[in-house]
Length: 48
Image (cartoon, rainbow, N blue to C red; front, top):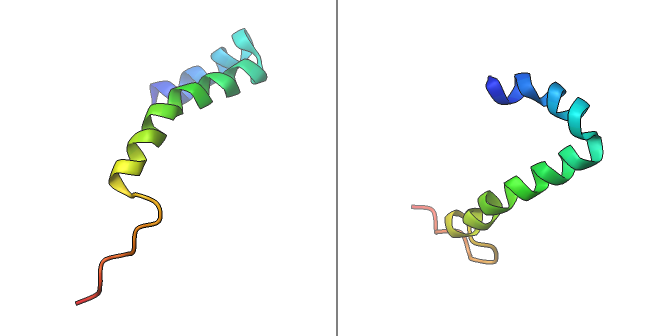
């Protein structure tokens, strides 16, 4: 995919540290939305 193909160029341009920080920053909204889909601490629904 495009994201995989461009990662090498991004690492070459920014360096590993900045790419790691960029990926972490980009992942934050998805991690926040994950709490809506699978909230922590709730009991699982009973099996039928």
